[in-house]
Length: 168
Image (cartoon, rainbow, N blue to C red; front, side, top):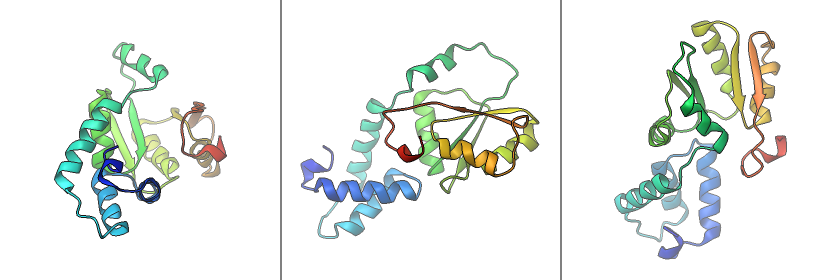
């Protein structure tokens, strides 16, 4: 509604989002792509960023099974978040959700989370547990030669998740 109310066609928005997701989504990046795709429009960038930020704070929520992580007692087991995308945007989302963590690794290229597993093994030792909702990310760990004794992989089935549906 932020964009369609300004006369931007849904098809343009869908194409812009698709491109922005391949680059590691950020609100600023999305708007730059949109400006390139619709040069005839004069976009109030700062106002759009504010509206997008307000929407994000209303719409962002943890999955119910992840919500239980908040109730876990403090342990000496490090919790590391490995995520793909624009580092500032990923950290913004994590902060908005008030997720407690010891470390965060943001990958800048799709399907490279397995490379972060090697970093985590060097930092924390084996075994580590890698949970993801994309089978392709989990499969990449094994394809990279990491064994079950080094990295235990767990798939979370997210039938409502629009990304990576072909590999679920």
